[in-house]
Image 1 (tube, rainbow, N blue to C red):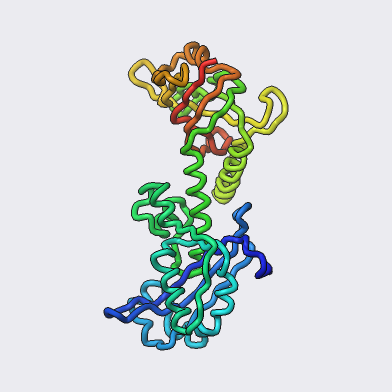
Image 2 (tube, rainbow, N blue to C red):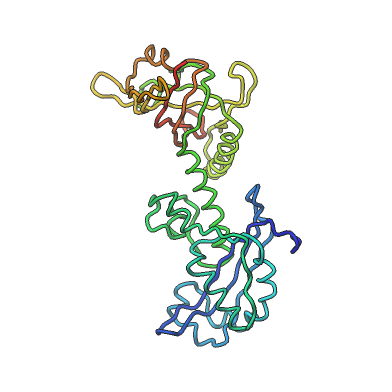
Length: 337
């Protein structure tokens, strides 16, 4: 049990309510769910969930049941909001609040509920609304940016529209989105090993790759991605051997390192790189686009000790009894030295 004195945790919360069927009817809270999350490790520390009995059970219409599955019979023996108000206040007051669309909906409903029982509402230390945050920073990758759409986009399952399930899903969605946003940004890496062409793809084309430094912040993100991908891989019952994305074996590579794959496409009798490669000659010069496949030319440009700003994505693979996730370079900006 987390001490109520400690206000450092992030309070993810969600309300399930009735759906008004006529103008001016208002909302009634049917369920409150929350988790307290460690802000450093983003792990759940404590949870609380309860159904709530509204003052008028007739407010639970067919439309309301269709929205969240909560019937009048389900809440007939549940506590009223007045009976849980102390616990809700203790969970939320003075902490950072987090949730999906909470600024426009949940926070408003919460204040209405406290006003109805003549109690001052809890006040947040700060607010993280994942709908506003992800719409601004994550764009429209997941369609309408509703929780159900985001969960489907990341393969997290179907939204149940129940409070505790939704806040836990919200936390996982934020973790995935944070990973994507981190990987979209440039990571300055030092090349540890030159080009390798020992990998061959399904079309028989050599796969170019370079081994680069893996700084601590990148290692942390990639380790988390690796753990999630491996869990799903184990559930798939594949016979392949899982290979971690971060190489920590001592020896030639001066670990830890990661391998950046440079994909290519065949056009007639020749192949060209898909990865865009730029050369940063000086702070004032414009980058020069290089899209060649000549390994000797690439080695002259990118060699051990080079600094590259890498933009890459993660790609799972299961090939020739080996599985894992690989880093696919979308763009490299190489510093001259």
